[in-house]
Image 1 (spheres, rainbow, N blue to C red):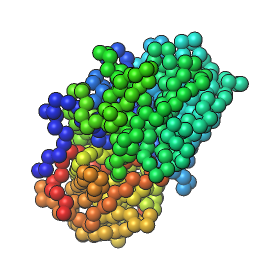
Image 2: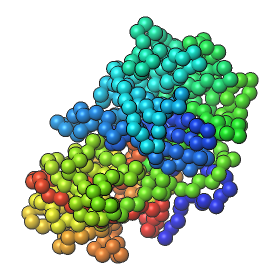
Image 3: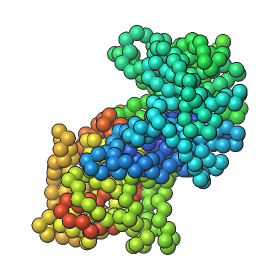
Image 4: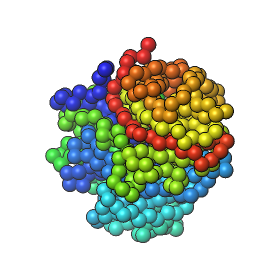
Length: 511
């Protein structure tokens, strides 16, 4: 076995702190505990909440919502989808013993405010209002007012109603006309991703911008009043690490949490140390993002961000571990972890033409630098036209599965070409239990995936061709492993997945 996981024996933490798609992070510290929220897009449940005691090792502890809404796009109905949309960047805050998570969704045209006293267990209450305020940040100020800043390029500010039911009429105004200015005049992406912090009486506004021909860049604006005037600086321009904010430790250290576009695995979180000079946060070491940090070492992402699952549950327990998210809103009557003990059952309830049209695909993140996922599926109850198996989900997807056509079963490997699914290999199969494996190599952005099958779970055969994974904006997230089952001709069939095993290693080095 080739072991390429992070060496937990290192005395210092390594960047990236999470080698997985955890973009648009927002972070708070409550006493000695850190909480972080992240972007969801089309997945359900949404707005993951992660917890850490050291800023490096994180675990999923909750989601802000189970379902964002019931519009066609979120339900994959009537030809609509929420790929790359759904809910975007969130803002997490703690005020008066209450936790707040704000997000927005062009898919529903709304802005959301989720509140709870118990961030790890809930319950959550929600207020929503129109319109959808892009990349918003919320600040509870000392005068009792609640402010929201949002926008791209031109940044806006307004007061929120005290019950978070909407924007106070007459308070909306331009805060910064051109927030990208510190990065120059030739800008490809206007300053967005606002995050506001009040430190020692000053207000600090973090944004990401992207100079044309350059890289993603951090700009910071400072003001003595929340309404300005603001003066801005280019704060970091290295490796494309950008978008985020500030966090301090109980012993007085400061860091900026940011992310980096890292190819097909997605947008991965980094930490950079911060020093203060003349009232300004100075990011990085000599303006650079360090490879190591003066923090405890990384322990890896398994099992707190991704995890294996034997699907063994107590009787009548329908719950899934937090590592799982559905591709769009699920149809709850068409899945079960209790109907057959120790198995995940996925039933078909409608007919779909392609994998990305199908509901109830159950997903987990892929992780870097390398990872593999394995499953076994009982296909004895498939119906004519059904297709079930293990996938790598993005716009340019690939999967391996079993099809039932003309009464015969075949193992098929598929990947997309020019946006169309193409069968790259087909192998007849007569037995009802088949084993599948997918392996991903994100080392140095190789972004290569390979698929395997086995008839006994021991001897594996590579099938089909390499999937060249590509990060695309239409899906706007890193590749995810998926367990799927969809019908093309008849409904009412089902398959049973015996287990899902994820590892941070490869079976072999792909040639």
